[in-house]
Length: 189
Length: 253
Image 1 (cartoon, chains in turn red, cyan):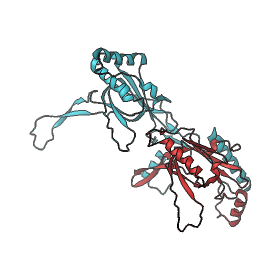
Image 2 (tube, rainbow over the protein chains, first blue to last red):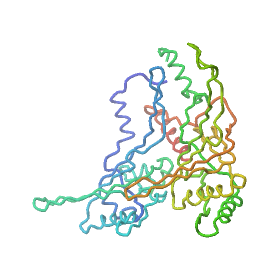
Image 3 (tube, chains in turn green, blue):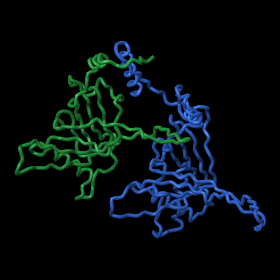
Image 4 (cartoon, rainbow over the protein chains, first blue to last red):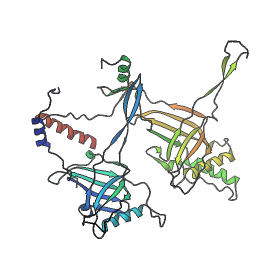
């Protein structure tokens, strides 16, 4: 039977002490394996600067009856799956961006009119890991069927620049992400 | 619930699963995109008959069409997965007015003239134009072969099954089309614009169209649900953690 009493500060405190909070830096892009490039672990991907844990949506279907609207669940969709974005630091020799340029041209090369533009398969994934304060993984999700879409532009400020570190954005598309619980959480990495 | 109008309450009760997780079959709203299609034919009969018919009519290269692929090559998990859309034919009857034309204020009577004959009832299927083009490499030669041999060659006919599934991927209902043959294949427009992937409509005629009726039951049960009950702290929290672990195990299985 549910307790009808309002929650107290003590309830919040005891819950927070036990379950703690996730922090905005406790997240890693652990791997990118798409047509043209494959990154894994602590190589180039340490330059991944910001990324998001994507969401999932159940479509809403409306049924009307006698002036009342009823809401019925429909199919599952993955909002933003057509443009999943990761920001990267821009290294001085432009190596990381060059990799993505290669990947982009692997998908479609307008100079030769050839490319691997078929539907990306289950082997094309982006691995994302949510970690705890001990840097151990607590959740891992795989964006299935990932392929590159957009390599963002970079602005330079030649006259008035202050030496700001440059970064750039890369956008990927994916079909869906794999359920957290389908991976063995004790053996994530 | 008791404050709802009876009409609303009964509607909600009928269409929802309720606490027992079971729902009346009469009212269960299945998602409409859960369907599969299959062609049933003998590959060793249909394809040679198509190619033989064309070959005997066109000995030169004037109509060099050949059936070099077939729907069975596109089947995965019991479905021709190149099919994108199916239009199930309607049923239509034609009525005639009966009686005199000048009846003052009386309306004339009416009588059934005929049901729509099978040649006017069509089964339309849209297919992706993939690299191994099913339309050009199977349906178009098949249609040409029908034009040469005619329907008297019964080896040029096949059977089509369309099945619809419920929320447990159990067979909900389906349709069997017998003695099927193509009557129209859609043309194709090529341009230099950025276009969506091409789909082409194949129109099929048939002699018989009848339902597949699966075994009926009174209720539709939902797939086994995982219920994670949130708890406050202490022993309740342990119970919640155990439930969460069970949920993960279940979903991972």
